Figure 1 (cartoon, rainbow, N blue to C red):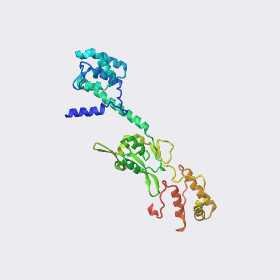
Figure 2: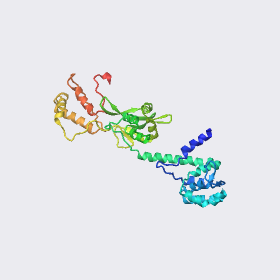
Figure 3: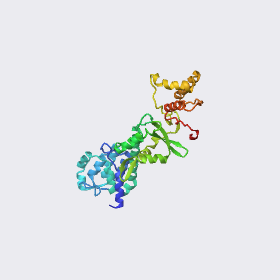
Figure 4: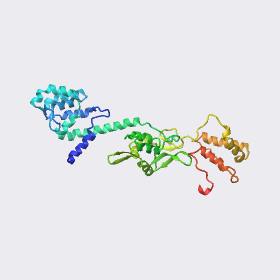
Length: 363
């Protein structure tokens, strides 16, 4: 096969697709249909159907024309058969029979093949660009339809689904060569925001220190390395990875900025709720030991300080988007329970707090 023939074969495979996902012949748009009708001129039309690359048969012409949905374009094509072309004696004699047979086998895309072999200059100049245009329109339309179907997940720290789950699903072939399924899962984990030097990536990952999921921030190189390690499927010699799914639907992951708390869906909100859920009923016996430590040791049995500390921390929990503008300084002998007090508070704020330090040099 010559390179020219190979290139044409590749063109036909990409742009000449005429079967939709349901297995039915796709309709031809009116612009392309009109162009095909305009090109059906100065042809020698035979009666007996041979391969299209050898000769033009009357049956193939009728099959193509009856596949055109717009009636006026189809009628013009019918009129042009005899007016602008030369029919063999047998073709002219069997005109009615060929028309009847063609009506039962409509396929407008046959016309593009007729022009490819028997009106080559017209095909290259007019039909080929329209086929490419038609392909791009269908491709974009398919992307738009797919995007509409993708569930737009937000990051939920309470959901234990992480990148390791995507890797596991990919290994088990659960994505079935569908980028949209991969994108749906990635949306549960990753968001993209503009930063000074390009894009910054927000990713949900497991935090072993706090035994919970947390938000981490990574640059493009780091996120690319992680996603490229997740192989989804093989496309010829190319390994398709999770980074391909992210790039395909990049706009779905984009946020305009980051704030600790925001009700704007276009802004990524760092605060995702607390690790522990609020109970409807208070079990005092579970917390009386800790409250005793706070009152007896931290507040030094001062009722006013004790109430202040409880209200201070309650205000932090209940108003995560506000600042108390107050810092508590603990002073006392080593081993009396200061770390126990702060460790409990940090655990309640897991994911948004830093671990306790015992040496200021570690800060």
